[in-house]
Image (cartoon, rainbow, N blue to C red; front, side, top):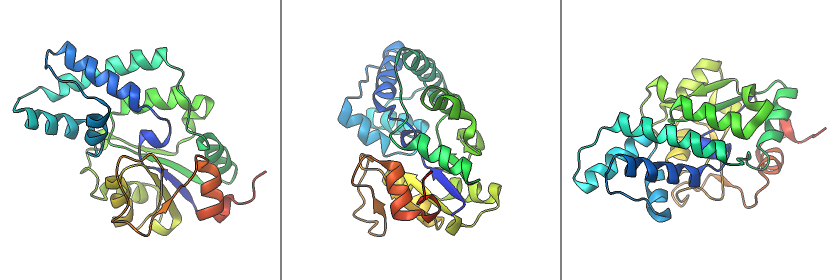
Length: 226
């Protein structure tokens, strides 16, 4: 195994409630009359990007919106809320970063989130390990959204790796589909925004210890822990 690929910001840290609040405050600021409760937000999360979520919801409401303007407001509010929070990395994430660095393995993030948001989250959640990611794929790469495999294909090509060299950590069905279409094996997080009934070959983590699942289930390179 040569690389671990984190498939979304949510696989690094749980920012879902901060995101939901920032969207709702942005909707208020733009006088849209929208409100995403927990259920609605989880439904929207099944779409692969913030742009897709806003466009889909606007279509459902029969409204035309300035998506880039709302996104810019949401990111600004998200940063403010993040500064007031005590965001922590998911259990096991920092251990994975430490161990892969020691063993000269690559760590990658493939996300369709704005690069500004990615940088905010990794700085807040990862601390001194924020710079340890070898590659970040973001909305600036302008790749087709998941479940198409382009973000994974791009990452593999950029690092000169084969699909069999990597394992992906994903929290949505569309993300898992993208990884598997690219030929990359997947660990599914237990609180993913979707189901895995149509992906019977996935390894689903049954507990919160992400590092333990990686080292014991799918990554022999990590089985001997210092």
